[in-house]
Structures are given as structure tokens and as C-alpha cells.
Length: 430
Image 1 (cartoon, rainbow, N blue to C red):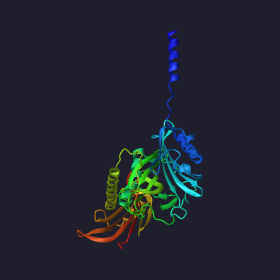
Image 2 (image 1 turned 120 degrees about the vertical axis):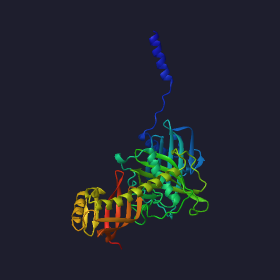
Image 3 (image 1 turned 90 degrees about the horizontal axis):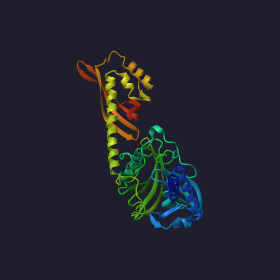
Image 4 (image 1 turned 90 degrees about the vertical axis):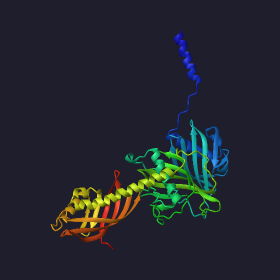
């Protein structure tokens, strides 16, 4: 009897305790964005599962749910890119909506608690018919943004954030190369639906070649980290640069596709707002100041430059030692050597070519040496360029005599953490 009573009491206790809501997975977060858009277009915030005390902001201004664009939106513009942060329970998206015929670029960040929406952060930009930025590139999926991240180049959450925060540091000093901001070779940037830099843009410069003004007061806050899709969403206020109107600044929710230590794509939705605009939502970055990121990246660049400089010197040392196996190992698997004596590609051909070139008995080992100088190195993420000068000396009667002078122009690549020659060209001095 006592056993049966205990069982009944346990059942009653379970029935009396409400089940705790489980965290949203990716499908759940995606569904919340869909429900939000449906409710927005229907002008019915009551359709949403809102947590008690839900907070709503539009352009960093506190509103009641149902205010702002909720009153004026008339349709769906057909573009949507989601950013889902399962760990922090955040569902964010870039959307194109309509007010009549006018496109509206809409950024939304939903803060989820126990499966309900506890916070709604939005940024609104109405596209002027004659405006410089038109959403011409938002009629189709964004290149690379939904590509699977290569498993071997997946980054930790912390490193994803650090990689993305290298971007505002480039803005801060007005130079992505010196920051250094690590862009992949295929990187591009789309701002408010228009290409403004990189691959895919037929009328603008590359990510490192573009001219950017200094933004010394830029502020960045981490809004979401989509670890599965390799995307970091930053809120940024570009600060007062006297270029966006009196007392105005660009405020953006900007997405960065990152993996392998590089930024592969950038999609920005921005509005022009008072320079005093603060985000008003907590950053997901534990470090409020990006300065340590800047210092770390600058240190990494110095280390990369020194490693490349050692590679350039090792090239001459291996030739002088006639160690052509070690020489060939300085090149990537598909690396190439070019010079007046011919062109060789791949380690096997490069080694054979050097052995043939130095088979001349008139230049025996130990009777010649290279002097390498005038190194100019530019690191761009996992790739780099370098130029240098060389003089090839022969020993005659115990005295060095210059035999050949020239220069090298190099393309370099980091392979397994080690810098290698992708292409080395030996050229005349001029």
C-alpha cells in the first residue's frame, strides 16, 4: 500500500510541475523568423509567441511590439538570409520588404527565451528611388553565404568572432592591409544590395585595393554567431567622419562569412542615423574592446612577414648548398619557378630543373653564393606577395665577383601553417 501511495504521489508531482521548454534548434529558430515575418506582414504581433516583458527596438529606439514598420509594411520583397545562433538562442535575418512599391531593407535579431521571443531588435532602411544603393543583387541567393564550411577549416566560435572583428579594425585605421583584415581571394562585399568591392564587382576594386577613409570612432558589437554556417553578424556604428551628413553616421548589421581564418563574403544592411546611436543590446563578445584583436592581428602579420623573409633567404641558402630536394620543398605542390632558363612546375620538375641548371662544373658547390636584399612583403590573409633583389657571386682567386644580378617577384601561399612559393619569377634587375 505504501509503495502504491508513493507511486501516486510521484505521478501527481510530475503532473503538477510544468515541463521546461527546450532550447530552439536550427529548425525552430528558422520557424520563428518565418512566424515573425508572417505576423509582421499581417500587422498582427499577437500572432507571435512573446515572452513576458518582451523588448522591441527599431533603429535603437524603444517601441511597443506592433509599432514602427509594423504599421506601414505592405509586402514581402522576396529576399531573406538567416543567421542562426543556437548557443545564444538568437534568430537573425536580412530581409527585403515593401512599403507600397518602395523596397525596405530590414534587419531583425530575435532574442529567444524558452522557445518564445523575448527581444526584437530591428534596423530599417528605406531605399530611395534615386539612391546610390539599389538592391539589385538581392533577387537571388548571396554567393558563398550558404556554402558548407570545409570541416578541416572550421573555426571555434571565439576565432570566428576575432576574424570578423578584424574588419572594423581596418575601418578604424583606414587600411585593410595594415589592420590586417584577412580576406580570402574570392571575397566580396555587398552593401544595401549593391556590390562595392571584391570578386563579382565589375566596376570596383578588390578588398585590399579599395580606398577607405579612416573611421577612428567605429564601434562594433557581436549580434549573432552562426557556428554551423560560419557567419558572424556585427552591429556597427561607423562614427562621425563628416561624410554621412551633419551629426550622422552609418549604422549597420553586417554579416561576415568566415572560415579558415579568412573573411569570404560580406553582406551589409545599413541606415544613416544620428552619430550618437547606441545599439542598446549586449554584445556576444566577452571582450568589449576590439583593441586586443587588433594587437593580435598586427603581431600575426609581423610573424608572417618574418616567416616569409626566412623563406626568401632559405631559397638562396639551398641553392648555394646544392640541396635541391630542400629547395623544391619550399614550393607548394603545384608551385612554379620561372626564369630565363625555363619554367618548372611541381616539386619533381623544379628539383630536376635546378639540378640541370647547376650541373655546370664551372660553378662548383662552395664557390658561389647569393646575397638577398630589398625585401618587400605584403600579407593578405592566407596569401602574400613579395619582391626582392639578388646578386649571385662567384669566387675567383679567393675574391667574390658579382656574376648575375636580378630580382624576384613572388606569389606565396600558407600551406598547413607554413609559407610556400606558389610562383617565383626570376627577372632582370630593371
